[in-house]
Length: 332
Image: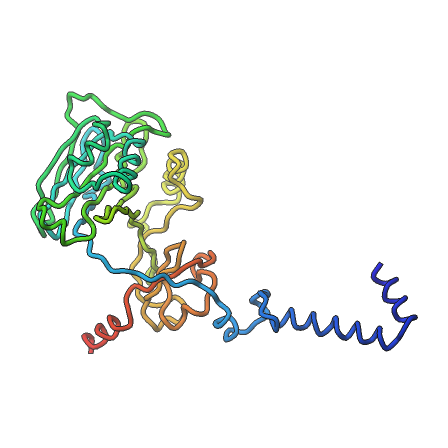
């Protein structure tokens, strides 16, 4: 059809035909080279043009101090029957309240109540929000900066060996950290921290780990605490990481529980050099993949994460330029 049109046009006026073909050539060239500001494949542009055309939103971050810290000690030895050891690291005197067999539905309803109804700043507030939908409760007083090891275990008279097949209606353990002194709640933006902990049992043998951590703010919001992932300078040793068979088994358990988001989260590493230039220090975190891998000089050149190739929607800096200058002066 196009050929018939061109032949007819040429017969009508050869000069007009040449003008139309030349105009089409100019318009096509402009589209390919990006003269009109429209997006074209990046492979056709050089690095300088890519830097200025990249539109990655940079989040404005607000620094807050988290007074709570919670880790699992020796997770390989933890189980529902033998108990679990938790290590706390709090900046102020706090209370650790453990809820065994906490209802999944009631927990997330409680988080919504923190936003819309009342603030969960004490263990009693969470109990009221849960409507006592848990099997057993333990509470411990934590001294500031003590890094205490707390041993938690279900009483033997409960005779609970597992929490059923997945998907489950109860979490094995939910740990709540709150500030013990009322005056301290006026100082910190974060007033409590909720940790959802999986503990292996007779039915579900996935290794012990913290599944979710929620930071509850005095203003009525709560945020899901996430890990940041960095590249590794050294090759991991076989003894420090699980074998491929163990990784596949754990992935299967995660998929059954609905906790797998398409790929297993990589292990947290400790490299501080930019993965691109290997010269500048890492300062930018890319979202949504959470890879901390680029320095200030390289972040403007990438629309995709250089580690996982996922498109970057947002990014934020780990520290400001002033803080970086202070660190340089300290090292000199």
